[in-house]
Image (cartoon, rainbow over all chains, first blue to last red; front, side):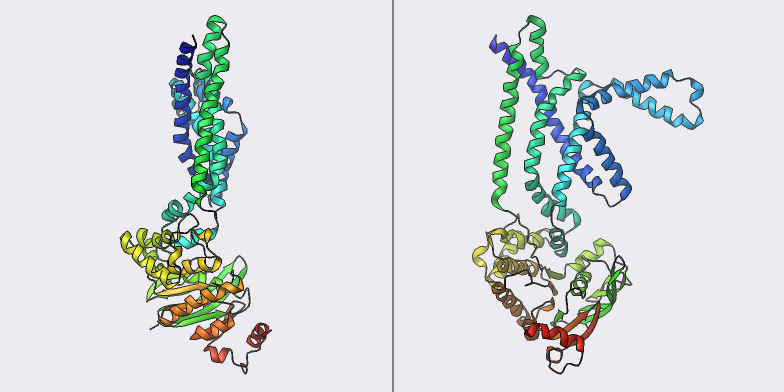
Length: 240
Length: 249
């Protein structure tokens, strides 16, 4: 019994890992791009990005999952239900946009999860990146420029490595939170480790598999904690 | 034929005009010390020369190549090769803390000038021995004293083979007992005929090393002459007299 529960939870945990890994893969670069937006010298871009980050960080991830999964379909229904005369020439383009968006509703639950998680975590990461980048003294950029480096060289060779060292502690917090947040995927019926345990409750009133999922989370976040500790130590060879 | 020419440079920060139409030209192998009270625009002027600050008016040429003409800059790609002929040393050193002494020095030669790495390392070793820091080659900046960091910063700038070196108060962030080692390195450069502009508060150093001393006050150059004349007791400019008297203490 124990072995078969373990096997089935492990299967559920595989999905947890997949959400976790792919979210990191997409959200880290996107977060960097968003952080550039929130530091943009073009005020309009800066404020749009900041407002977006505020909305994403200011609402629950669970709500975002629901909106991304059900929202487009509901918009399509709403558009179909709307009397034709209300679709006058002015909002004709809007109709096409709504039709286009509602066509997304066919998308896979897993893709919805990935979109919601990626956007949500990218916004959190962007704030960490922004803090890290703004903490690098101006003199570092200037030293690079006077040596003839291009802006991109200064950023990737001089600034970013120093940013990484600074952001490891807040990043490790956020990444460990992500491990646990993956359990939210089941609100739009994506099968992951907690769901795989609940199957046992529904089937035979067996509750311990649900407690057992905690071991999976603990093991994985334990590994991550060790990993980040190791990275921190690795980067401890200098201080600025 | 001057190597660097700055003509009628104006620079404002907001409403505050920091440079009020400054002209200066420097001949090859010449050493110019720029002195003057704090806030007189010395550092800003230096930073305008290599576009760390953009000017509002005026023309800057290096070796006849335009850095800015009537405050219009050539495109970045065209300007970069010209600007990198100017080495710069900062008050705060600005070494890259995540790179070792050696990596600090070879970074730009390798990734900007495409010098083969082993060649860049050889040059770096030579430069480090010139500044007396051979044994620190694998240390990180945080392991060095301020004076040592500044000497590495000088070596790093020299590794790009600059035609002219700009020093922005190179000893102002150092403890008094460490300034000597940095000034010694700069003097050695002067002896090797490096063209240099040095913004400094070290009057005796300026007097000793400079061919010409430029005195700035409130965004203007009010004197540009040999050290002997500037530091002479019968210099008749009251502003300079008043300034120099503070250093006699």
